[in-house]
Length: 611
Image (cartoon, rainbow, N blue to C red):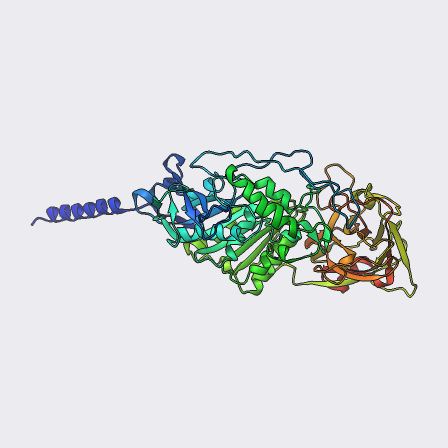
């Protein structure tokens, strides 16, 4: 055989092998620097397969004698159909997809009444007009994750949209519903093509590995699912989640509204999301809103009881196995930053893989896409990118963007130590907040008047409606990281009183567009009747002093030199609390009152910063 013939045959064989390889090659996810990349073959929305189904749960909460089914939609690359490709899932669930109740007069509770007395009248109950068309429940998450090699799944929570059941706002069915969907994605639960039919549908395209994310209520549901310990839920990224409905609607025994929604309570949120089957709503209203909630929510004492304990995910965290990347804003006065912190620390103590991302803004705000991508790439695709060894805490500094957080070993900053500060007289103007303790015995009083806002009280040079104590002017920046704690000794001239505490940075920036971090550092609220425990309250004996301690909201903030840190104590907060008539007098024993402030560098650093 001639040499040229041999070369020709070799070339022919190579070409044939290459053709076979090309013919058999399948589209797969691509990874670079530990992150899933956009794959051109996954990136054409016209090629995406979209369909919906109903997943059967293990509960019946709408009273029809049938197991409730959750409405689910799926968006997946065509290669899951044409090439037999199996992919992991990004899953978001919500009560909001099918619409919300209109804002009608009287839907919130009237907060203008004396403490310990009911509202003057029942509130209005608006009805939700359901919106949306099959098969699309939502478009969130799709453009971000489908091109990167994921299937995206949405579901409406119980009693909303085309999902059956009753909304319970934190009840067990809101944990078991996403569990059922994850079970279906793993072949352990049944999915049907219709809400009442028997034709089944299987998730043949699923690897069984699921990651959940979402913001606010949508961020609560991933945690709810994780507390069931369901197999297949590998990682969650909750953003500003409500981790306890007690901590959302109450504070240390005090009836307290979420920021921006004065007079909201758990039954208001129930009406707000109840977009399910109109023929089932009367049963749900009677069973859940008008019985379980009405009997359990207790707007009179504000105590923590079995009703609230059943809607506190910290009590259910034991079975949780999913890796947790938590996200929140330090100036979120709606779902306050304690919600993320309490779950993050509990998950860390369990030995789970955890990270926390905090920014300086308000409600919402997910971690940078790169952080989320690394998290899901590792836990869902199994790529060893080292994310589990990254720093635990990522804090967006005051002047930085959300995409440039500063890494720290943990939150609170491990170098932060509690510094105990004492109060010196002069609170109607500005008393001192210092390290040394005087031998003089001082008591100072304030008179409640909710017509003054907290902002105005902090900005006034003098007021009888608040007490203000300030540090010396800072000679150096002071980094606060963690939970400040107030230990207060006080008396009231009435059996009940509101107690509000703000930590502020002074002088107050009065500019209209002042940065959110310039004035309020953190806040806290409490009911002095609960001085023993949030589980029990008792009427105050007028004139008798009580000792009470509670934490303010967690924070990580650098207070600039030239500022003063101020502790402001007042009674009713007209953005958050019930609003009794003016006149309640609180007397604070300064010798029995201290502020514990978590400062990086501890007491020695504080001395140098204020000397």
